[in-house]
Image 1 (cartoon, each protein chain N blue to C red):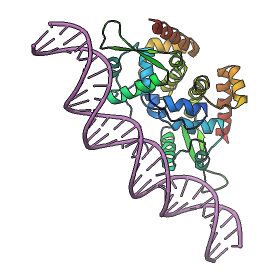
Image 2: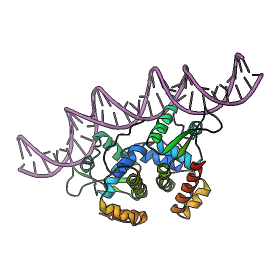
Image 3: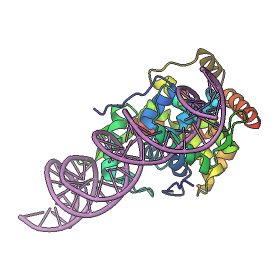
Image 4: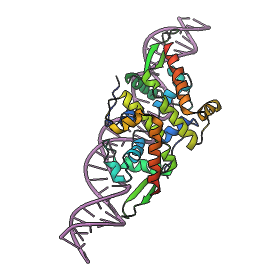
Length: 138
Length: 138
DNA sequence: CTAATTCACTTGCATATTGCAAGTAATATC
DNA sequence: GATATTACTTGCAATATGCAAGTGAATTAG
């Protein structure tokens, strides 16, 4: 049970106590936008997270109730990580980060996602929240 | 000139390269929601940022173009930090963090802000962006 | 049935970042 | 001229991260 140190009772601060590092939101991104769900898949991402850091962040996310961990139905040696509602609720944060990144940093974005975003952020949030909830039921 | 190491060209990743730590968004919060603009004011916050970390984050925010630094009009020994448009554009991220924190963590929130948020997130974002832009013109 | 492989980690260690306390330097006030 | 304010910097211990290698259970290949 990983403990998270709370610095104050400000909602921004408490959110950052859990999400405020370089890796946590990238793991959630991989779950939401890349459909990833296993340790091995998370290791494949372009940013190259270290194995010990990934294990630590997954343990924090699980103990904080953003994800669940379950044995895969096909293999007993494999674990499937799934988003909880608390995890699904981070999608507006992730989408806000995408918009800021697109506007202010040199980035490569999936053209389909870019088009969806131009039609409105709310629709994008709702779409990926719906997809994430469907995936969580499997 | 502080350099920020870019891990990939994903917009979420590039955003987190600048904003993804425990302190940066709290400084921006203080500017946006508490009207703070000086080193001494940032040090006063409940989370107790260390002086060297604050100096470092202000230098990063300035070199990345989210804030500007100027000598105060009343005292030459005082500096005023102000948000740029790039800084103002982080407000949707901060508001998304507030909403997640309120919903999922034990927090204390300003009742006025809570009421504003219940009436809709977009209005809150627009209000504080307008206020921040006005402040930047002083 | 045994050996190699996959999968999910853990361990050890060098480097980087953070936290804490104290010190410095340029104004500004008394 | 002495004290205070403002914005830092410095030194050092504690913590976190990055990297390479190792472990162990479950699965597949021969």
